[in-house]
Image (cartoon, rainbow, N blue to C red; front, side):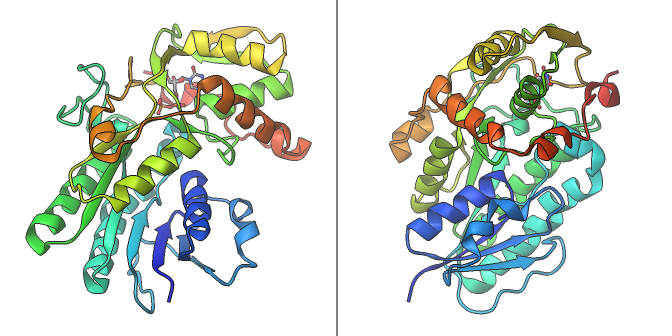
Amino acid sequence: MSKRVLITGAAGFLGSHLCDRFIKEGYHVIGIDNLITGDLANIEHLFKLEQFEFYNHDVTKFVHVPGKLDYILHFASPASPIDYLKIPIQTLKVGSLGTHNLLGLAKEKNARILIASTSEVYGDPLVHPQTEDYYGNVNTIGPRGVYDEAKRFQESITMAYHRFHGLETRIVRIFNTYGPRMRLNDGRVIPAFMGQALRGEDLTIFGDGLQTRSFCYVDDQIEGIYRLLMSDYALPVNIGNPDEITIKDFAEEIIKLTGTDQKIIYKDLPVDDPMQRKPDISLAKEILGWEATVPRSEGMKKTFEYFKSLTKEQLHKSEHKDFSKHIVK
Ligand code: UDP
């Protein structure tokens, strides 16, 4: 009998890529999503497979799955600043109550559970690059606090289940990840710039564009997560690509890549927007033998192909054009 894995957030960006990976590895995959930010189009191709099941369910409510489970991966959560603003309570609940339910399920099924944490636990970091032993600099009551604090609580309760109940747990701290199936209108910088280039609009840089990010291609991220799940390491591990770039330089790369002659316009910087972010991945290298291998130029080409393949209607259905006005001071 094949091994069984439960993936929450299965219709989301990372969740759907994880479903693909576990199907490829021969697992029986059970996906759960309440489709608030996920999209069934991301997993439509799996519905015809016998090894795939899907439940439209909100994991902040009691979760029941019949049969045995070997692994649980908890990837259900809004994951962009615009989503935290639109659905702050759900963001808090899925990281806290949702995680509690899934830990309870893992205990009941004697399953190993991996939870998706984030570089946001470091807040606007004062240590650079960020190592796992940095405690972070988070504004609990700012607009991003609903996500950051839910994820910090998630790490705490996961470690409590590990220490108190002896549950097998894994915690991945995911740094900015991109690739096909990102939601065009989620407000994040890559879909925002790609959508703007394809619609012939100016690219919007928030602040002076000197803030940095380090972008990891989705295939690398999935490989890191898979290796962490299979490892025996219970403490948090950063997974990301340390290739750091300013948002301004990144906008110029996008203009070159898309072959458009978009102008850059500047808007106010959102509240608590981290000034710098770059993972220290020494730990992942040491314990997982993992590092990112896809250069940004290659990953961005593939991502652009994906956004180009969207229909005109999808391209223009961008609800959040002026994201900055919602959360500037
Ligand atoms: N950003 C930008 N223009 C946009 C969207 C985002 O300049 O249209 C900036 C944003 O202020 C941040 C960076 O790009 O400094 C990355 O933003 P994103 O929302 O993708 O992720 P996060 O801030 O969570 O890393």
